[in-house]
Image (cartoon, rainbow, N blue to C red; front, side, top):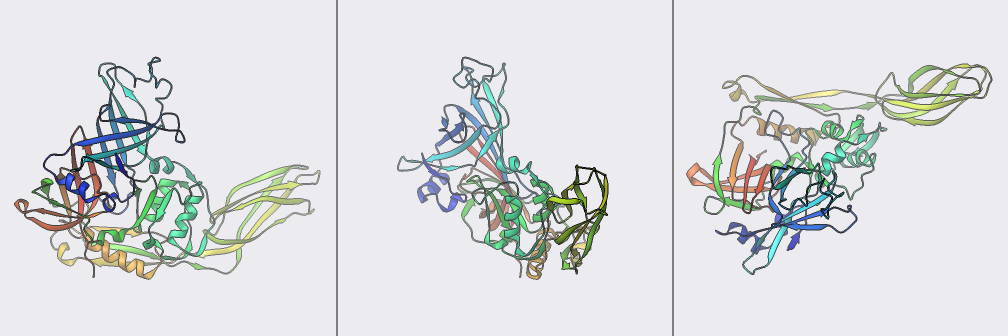
Length: 467
């Protein structure tokens, strides 16, 4: 199989592949690389002779109550023929005995035979096995998998220092680097090079941190090449069509529901305008240090928080016998070790002096008055401390208003399928029988199913037009 591994495969597959996708008769091929011996070892490649079926879910957003507020992990589940029980974890006669474990790396590829008899396929992503579900009454094994965004999303982001005069992209890199990720693990669109005067982030699981700092600014999902990708919400305005679906060669059904769950009559976007206050004591705390011993001051919260910079830390003690070391400061707290060289216990005061961040906010509101005459008033709130740039705020507000005040922006389509198209791509839809003609829309969710043949369903937003 000729493998296309680019994260945006529709731009790199051949015209012959595109022709084969739309052909009346299609012959599909599967290659499933399973790294039984570890990610650094050569994989075992299973084919359609082993793979009975699989399902792939990819998404960048949810058409529900908050259309731009979800961190989206992809899901992949495949089913293998197991009539000889070689994929049964407890079968000690199998060549895979002891290797059918959780967290096995899996890389699926789906290909088509072209007119020239070559098989060309695309990567469907990078996944990790949850478990191997071999049932004794069925001659098959089901294997659900998760992607690296889910895996990394469970890692804990520690408290970080505030960043000044940076960009959203650079601040993202700082957060990701705190859990050991490098630029080989993620890609940040250049459209996210927007200025931030002062940036700070909560600590917690990566998925929760990203949920907070990316809300309203960036879509976060897993690219086909195994990297987390961050793309600006402005991709919903992209009208450069990469593939056309018509009722003559692709569309089996299409539906434009009246989507009220994610429809709002007004949007309030809160802009953050932080300023740096003059230097002052942000922490003053007492601590007892035992004689000839030490005491840990752990996660002491500032009385003024967040703090842009801790300038100095001092210790007040009557005998001048207590020293301070192992200092760790974040934007919200500090830790250190206090050591006492005197035989007597000492009561000391630790003082941190720094530059507090003054949080100020400006609320911007837009109302669709015509819609409020039709449906009950509903208000969507978008607030993000990193949404500080005037142009970003203006553009985001215009986009979100156009998106969420249109109850007919959402499209559901069932198609024969093109695995080279991904969420975030702009496509055109034409099905005159359903009164859809050359409609341009962004894919936000796709479900692909293989069982020898391929079929797909798409959730799409009409391309948002803003002035």
